[in-house]
Image (cartoon, one colour):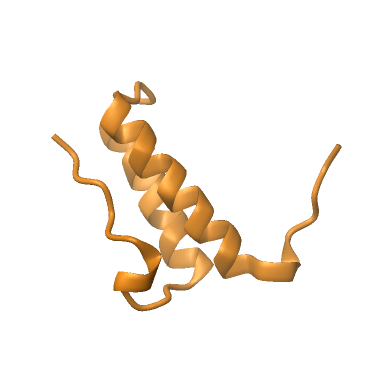
Length: 61
C-alpha cells in the first residue's frame, strides 16, 4: 500500500527534477495502473511539481 506524501508545508521544498523522478517511480512500480491511493499520491506529486517549476510552465489549450 502506498502512502500519501505529507502536505507541502510539512516538508522542505524539493526541485522539480526530484519530484518528477518520484512521479516516474510511481508509474513504474504500479505498471501504470493507479489505485485510489496511488492516484491521490500522483495528484499531490503533480501539484508539487507544478509549484516547483513555477512560472517556467507553459499552459496549453
